[in-house]
Amino acid sequence: MVDTAYIDSQLEKYQDKLTKFISDKLKDKLYMANDKYVLSEKEVDSIIEDCIKAYETSLVDPGEAVGTVAAQSLGEPGTQMTLNTFHYAGVADINVTLGLPRIIEIVDARKDPDTPVMRIYLDEEIRDNREKAEEIVKEIEGTTIESISKSMKIDVINMSIVVELDNYKMEKQGLTINDIKEKLYKLKKVENIEDEDNFLTLKAGDVSLMELRKFFNRVRSHQLKGIKNVKRALIKKEGDEYVIYTEGSNLGEAFKIPGVDITRSISNDIHEIQRVLGIEAARRSIVVEIKKTLEEQGLEVDLRHIMLLADLMTMEGEIKQIGRHGISGEKSSILARASFEVTTNHLMKAAKFGEIDPLSGVTENVIIGQPIPLGTGNVKLIMKK
Image (tube, rainbow, N blue to C red; front, side, top):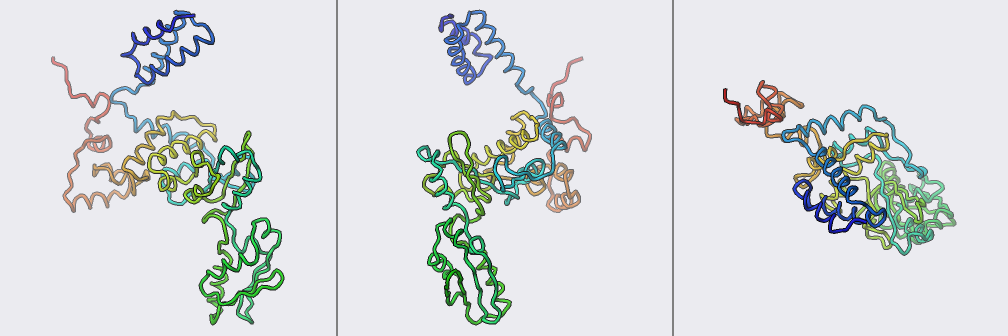
């Protein structure tokens, strides 16, 4: 077994070739490997040299067009992606947008994703308890009058709404007729509610037929319990624990429910993550969601390209789309803005306000035929003859 002092001395010898973070990590790994496999000095040297070589080949060359390379590396795999919405793997009845539509949804920074989903983990003491998981599902899952009724109709003769309740569904959601009546009385225009057997009759006072129809729609969608925007919640066994998947997302309200592990629970709605957890969490979510979407299609992209995109979208403290209403439309260069979309609008506006293009970027210099400030074009030296 090689002495740990030798490992320390060799790492110190190469400290100018590795960052402190990498050097410290490598030291820990070498200590562990030495204890387990009994390394020789030659093997230690070989491992350190391989790490230095891998680190140096991973560095970006000065003047590299990192934006262009990232755009190409993310855009090219997008042409191979499918356009479908799939069932969530292993969870019945919950659809989630995957493939190219999901990538577009993220880079466009859409406020309302097509299929918002939460993945809710439970606290350590209850995560293996199915009954506790079902109790939390009852608190999360949105329950409306329509979801616990057998039928609903408008009684035109008596100008009222008749609801036939489903006892099984009521019991499953832990609701009684009195609970339902109490919730319905909070609706505007409800004057009286009569209950007989499993039937509720709602009277809305002196209203027209058109107003009664509008009132019917409000009653049908009125939420009795659960979290707003969450339509359904399902339990899935993953390893030794139960995980709750929801159709619909409201992370802030879900975190208020006792038993929910807020350190692991997450949503695929990036704007909601920003509101609840902040911009750094949103940036991380962009990276994770894009990487996951690509991997689901069997595509592998270097993480640094995705990180650059996420940094660009969130660098000003809010999520901005890659488009003329976001990053591309806010470039300082007039020609760069005009080269993307609505060319005439950008040129006319720039002329109106007397804007000056500093010609500091790539696109504007390509347009006017000057060397671009990248690679050899970034060097301001010439050789003497």
